[in-house]
Image (tube, rainbow, N blue to C red):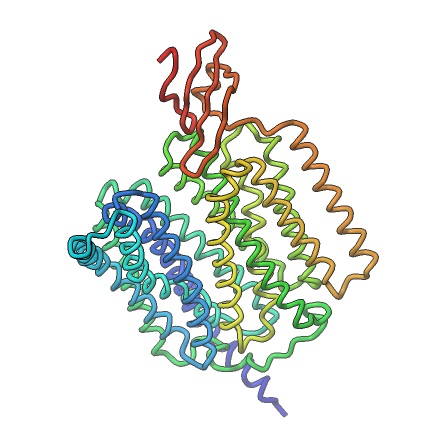
Length: 508
């Protein structure tokens, strides 16, 4: 007698060739969607620069709206798709909405500019007051498309999710594909498309791609159930202790969620530090941001792809996540004295690859079953994103002026190590003695790295202009807006430099 499960397996095996081609198409489209998302971020920041007249306000607005929107969209649409909605239809509507906003945003910004001028004339609001009004309106305008973007990952993962023992592969693989697409978008917008086509035209190209994606996905959504998950085959798949190791308690699951939030905090803080350092090598803050963002996204994409290959075969995932966080901290700290004279792009490679491993691990841990994958992934994505917002703000506005770039990296690295140690201690499948000895050993390793860093000395950031002069540093201050230094060369001349570029001196 053939069981229902066997019949379903036969039906699925018969349909696999066609389903394989559908999935390949969806993966390619999801890659292009990631590219469009970063194109919008670059283009809309350029548009906001014209609205605000200052890149600092424009950058704050674009980052705040994007991160908040991504978090909101991940939570809302993750829950929506778990209610039995057709994942492909939801995804098609999301892409269509994003594409429409690409064509509407120039008009929206133009209308907002008229509103700002009218409010300023009528109420006589000062510079900072009108800047706050601009921020509020621009934030609301950008929040909607960013929310639509935030919903794409949990919805697509829901479409691909078949059973729990393949969930890690799907999350890691799709997260990697979308992130690598973002690399393409960052490079193309920052260095090619805007230069060749213009700002608005670049946005229109990306919008056309989003509408193209929406049309194809909508057509695919009209087909019969395109995946085992959509057909409801795997909702009842059983999770055994052999699949994932010892069962985790609710507090341990919440700990994993908080850990990925702290991981996002540390990741964006390190990105801020590395961007500030890279200015001394490129002499251009825009190129520095684009370059470090590209390296950052590339490392995350590679790391996510690597971990996807083995995550479903590993037990003790809480300990694996803890070890990953510890290695992030150690590698970030170790890179300072070892690569002190190299561009920060090279310093960031290993830590960012490890960061890419953390998100799929936390998502796999926090997702109890396939039926709630949208909600679980939405929560993980939202917490990680909110942590990133806090990390970028605190690093840029507090840590750099307070303790500087290099010492700031050590502080953030220490937080990574601490979080990793706590995760290992909460892993139920490891004996207590083994956990304690592992944590102590790793703590000693980090202590050695920290001592090595402080004894070798974190010398001030130096550009190649100053290297030529063999400077003796007389004064060095790192602030929110830049790094100011006064140094004396071998001939006794004194020079004032801002971000490594000489602006005044006794010999200029």
